[in-house]
Length: 379
Image 1 (cartoon, helix red, strand yellow):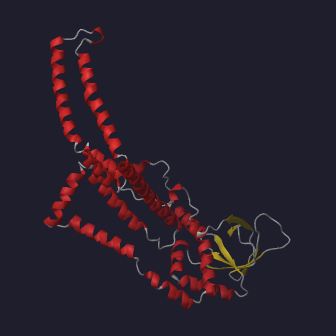
Image 2 (spheres, one colour):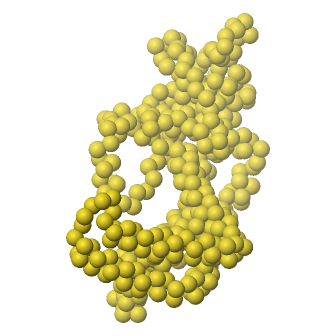
Image 3 (tube, one colour):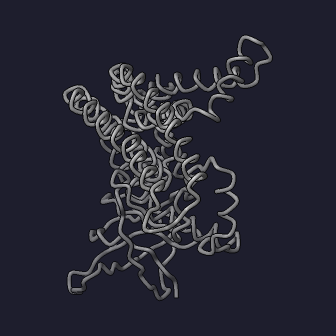
């Protein structure tokens, strides 16, 4: 018995095309009278850039034969009668396995398992080493994996192959070549990303003191300043966004879907950070006086007056506990002196609060995480 993978939405008669290795997979049916016309269309598609990408993933598409649907049979799934395959009569019993042709723009695709998707790039080496112990990452024989992946690629590329053939039928070959020629040049953002990459590598591997000294200072400050760490994180995200903007050239819908998720997830995180930061900036600007008064009253009450009350309570035999009077009085007076110094310093810093709030407003324009990083450094 021979297995034939048939698209569930194809219910018309004609010349079927697709792949015959490793199994027979029908990508679509052409409503043409002559088989030579179908061969010509497939050859034109194979010579195009998109066709070459599909051949690398799925193999060379070819004409499989003629198919016809009987008007007498009524089933929930189409059951064609294949009359000829490669010029020979089809006499083998057939088992039809139906699949859905997902459109590439919908980013839906078949995969062999959860590991069939593209793994995101992980920068942390400890995280990469921990993936070795992932029990869900099962190993499969390379031959079985390659055969199954080829079949899955054929299912995922069937709709794309049909669209290429339909486009070939509508547009002449010369027009297609003229349209595809200007698209071969790299976009501007790829040139910007390449320039940033080359500049970063020059700074990283440069032996000049002009570059080495600032890079050493930046690396030293990143160990102590959260603002410097956040700036470095933003630069990595910007570089990652520029690198992920270009489309996948090989036409693999799995990589396109993973790239789509990764790009827009990063963009969504950055935009949320900026939106919340701008809202925080507006809040700090409108209610600055109220926040300063609330901060001064509560901080002075909790950090000065409450501590003095606790020390005086501990110095007066709390709860009937007879402590060492001289020792408790020494500690009490010593800590009271420290609190007095702290109170004097706090009174000096109060005059700098408007400037500190202005700095926080400036940082909030770059996102709420930058504001939190500045608060950590100020504290």
